[in-house]
Image 1 (cartoon, rainbow, N blue to C red):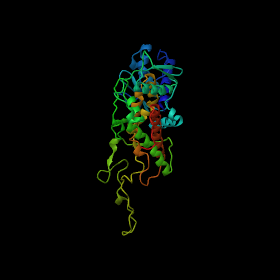
Image 2: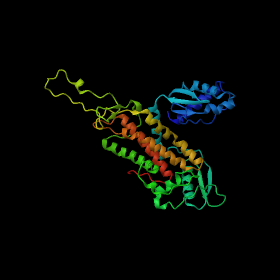
Image 3: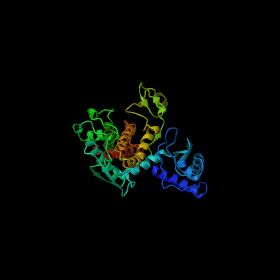
Image 4: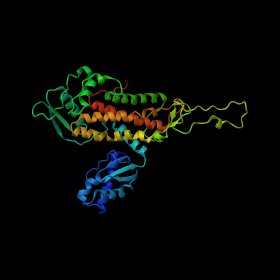
Length: 384
């Protein structure tokens, strides 16, 4: 179940509650589901009960309990927990289904994932000063607004309605991509840093992390092709949580899977005494148990960030804030990195359906990263 489908499910629950006479309120046009906040739980949360409490003339907690009774019966929902003043925290029955649904949508829409009609037909007039950062921000806003069906007209003159803090010096020496990032990544009210830090290929450089994550996803696709398999959405083979990591048979060796095999326990008792016994390699970096499961907690940030991409584009377009998109891309890059070591087979392991599903998820993240960088006017290299 994708976030869009879950939103419709929650809206259907509101309809049922109103039609059944348990709530006396107008049904909203749409319901937003987001990542659970502090104190929340599950996969998604919504504040629809708080929105309906006033019009319904009932306490938010009572409204939440009414909606919960309808939601727990819906297909694809495992549990619903009410927290705080009335937030509905929803756990999906199959996380793999959520991942597969999001991946399929991204594969179908490509760089158009997250594009919508929130600003359809709207003409946004930006009046900016003759200053390099203002020009760069206005151009990025124009591209982002276009993803939501709107159109931007850029003018120069008073009164100015888009005036980001100017750059302290000319960013051109950084090169086109780093200069764009230096001007767009900070919020409009923050002074941008124009320094060589934007060129350093290290973890401390957010631009490098975003472009490196994208390049890694593309490298995985090339490596998988050489191994004879391609991406296909499906079961990700979710397994133990990080606390289930165990020491391998050699010091410093960590792996996921069953306990190390004891070669003596697997000797053939009927074989001659001097016959060679089958050797069982211990699971090292080259030989691991078949497809170590990916802990579900490593996928939660990635799925949450991917599903938040459409909302991020809407917010960036509505608030004329490309910095929101830039920070979102950094979050996505950091979220996809833990998945990448689990995509390709190890040693003599054969590619499986789970490998293909994980590759599809990695490719989906790469697609979103490339699309986001393009909207910021920045190149997404295939090799880095």
